[in-house]
Image (tube, rainbow, N blue to C red):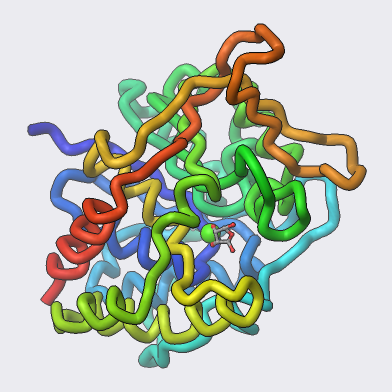
Length: 311
Ligand code: BDR
Ligand code: CA
């Protein structure tokens, strides 16, 4: 079967790092490049983290492109309370040899998409700044995006404010541009990612795989689950970002419902909220496929398979 072409845009981030592990190791996917954005930490940190993860996994040939260091309109926000000072606190990596490409992530997105046959999925698991900027700079790329799959948003509560989820709140205007690009879009929000809680028994299960990827997973979850407990009281950290990549590997993993979604750009209390018209009250056309359920057992099987792909 032909491999699914993918550009992965992220802000590593512990859960981004696990998603990157899946994306870089899955034979079903052709990872064209990794574009990095500021989000969980500053751009310097998130780019370095992406390089560290790929080097650790022995996938140094995967190209990394640094992108936007700031959101389009609002002031920058980071998530140091969850991901630490480096954005990837916990694992101790060997000295970094891998370097990012010189080309800017936005230029790479435009170049790679224009050169494609319209068969590239763009997955984002950070603020959507890079993709939005690419869409603004060259609107022709929209026709080349097969689908946008994002981790972000929520039909109900947020996780940074009562209304907003981090990736959308960190750049609501960028999310608005992507959601109105006219391309098929799958929104994987907190409604499903808060169902995949990484309890201690899951960490123990993954540790038994005993690969370099599973050792990284254990170190990542050591920090991530601790801060998730401190901030939210969860007994296991919600493994948000890998749901995006896992949903490409198994299209039946998440149940989606088409609905009209609008991003709140009011700069008020609900700034960054994804207003999801779950019941079709507004009578407006559906604009996104919103994930409403997930097969939790299947998700952990996909994670384990992904970790076992490495030595
Ligand atoms: C999202 O916010 C970030 O902190 C995580 O990496 C994830 O992408 C969850 O709201
Ligand atoms: Ca992320």
